[in-house]
Image (cartoon, rainbow, N blue to C red; front, side, top):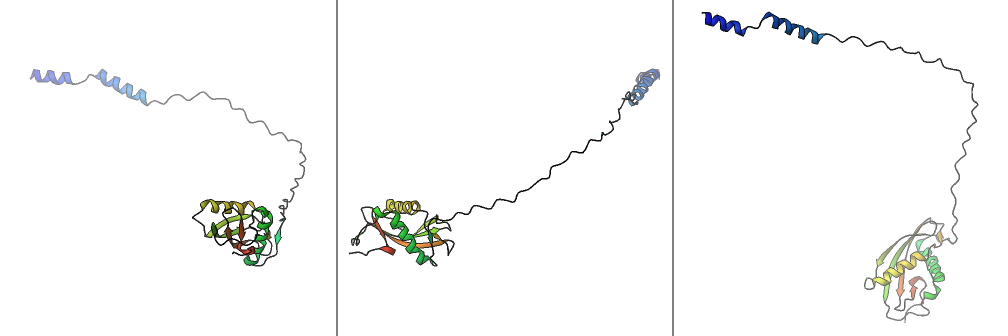
Length: 185
């Protein structure tokens, strides 16, 4: 029996240990002391400033857009009528490249081209309706020639126009347009 009593006593902590544990727990729960008060200065009173006169703001009306007046104008009312004005324009600009007289029976290329012209006479697009695909260099040259001849007569009555013309191309690089062609032998 004494053995059992001694074992039980060794297992039980002493009162001093309990007291120490309670003191540590209580010390951990204590709140820290409040921080020292900081002196806060009140904001300075607003100083009344003398009124500053404000100059009136004048807003100018927007400038009117610049109106570009085309150099060449066409009074054509239909794309077919405009085609003659465009062909005349090309012949005037490219006199040295126009084939004089009747075209020979065999041509290097025949192509049908549609050209879109805006209200200022600028070329906006070209499309082949019948392309001379066997001579791509001729196709490229015709397209370059059409674009280089701009500005075309401005289609003032239609606003913009798409016209179609047939290019008759000789192997010498000279051509005629069907609209103003002198025919073929």
